[in-house]
Image (cartoon, rainbow, N blue to C red; front, side, top):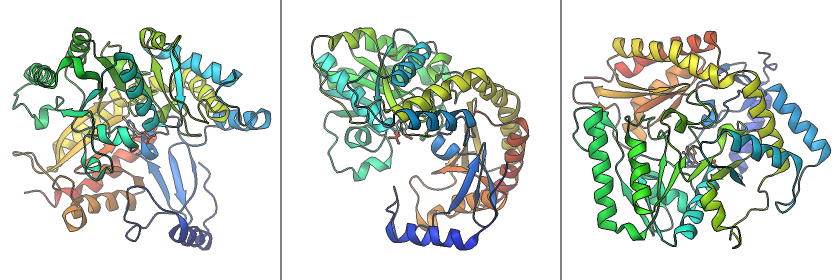
Length: 452
Ligand code: PLP
């Protein structure tokens, strides 16, 4: 990796302009201190001071192919020279090809692709399609989930960010998904957790009225909320319930899709086909904003003679689609999905289990591929989290100290509530993974200091 020459004065200028004019997501604007980044390549990024960071966050879990992949950069440059933009109503080579490559990889008959600019818009449109297809209004979604920050998507989200939503959650009903470590059902094993979670979903449907429910939306493996791999049989059980009541099954693969779990889609691990599947992030590693909905033949047919009342000026943007074509082709040619599976199985999984044995702050290790979470706890016996739910300020100090300890060691972690996620690019090498895991191992000592 070639880093640029340190230039602290340039970094200071970037930061000053940022603080004067950039309004940041999810932040108290006066309390943040964004790090100016000078460049990035592969699994690394570097600042203006000469510090290099191994990116174990893949930014927001989107750079599945790493930074500045030369084939993707070249495809964007080439497309920019040919045709930068074209309205969604025209047929254009890179859009057709991106749709074909995606449809070829999505499960079952999810063969029509509606393009958006990102994940939240994909969720908005999937929900709209489900409501129009069924003529019903309610959507069921789980607690401990994240689906995006636009109107419907934030209401579907099952975490505290929904609390400040400016629109009431009209038509959204939350239920509990399976999560044995903090079982909402007081289950003792995965089989029990699965059975009880399915019964709870059936009860929720019975009390809401099956004929009023348009869709159930789930992240195949909830990501932001803690990478909770569902127990065997759960997703198949939800599929069966949806079929029984004529409810549209939406799987949100915005974070788990495109190689992250060591398969093209997380759904591939569970042999389940939803009616609608949302994607974004890994589809082109976020080099140009892109997301979309993969649509089943039956739902697509609803809009054969009747117009679909939705669209976006930049739907299927040529630069975004060209980068998706290049990303998917590079992932196939360079066996990047296979790399994610192998690194997860051989390096990350075993190393995290070993780390968990040696650090009292690690309550549980969960995941697969390059999609792992460490649940950090104050007390291993009681599972009391290292910081309270939705902690901020002084309450969040143990997690802030741990994150700082990672950064001091050149590791950029993904930290959320009482968890740290190990989510490097799917291209991460064995050497890089070991380097990052060694830094994580050391940094966890900062979390251990807060255990009882
Ligand atoms: N759905 C899931 C599962 C996500 O993880 C995210 C983002 O993290 C979204 C939807 C929203 O995507 P975006 O931020 O691109 O709107």
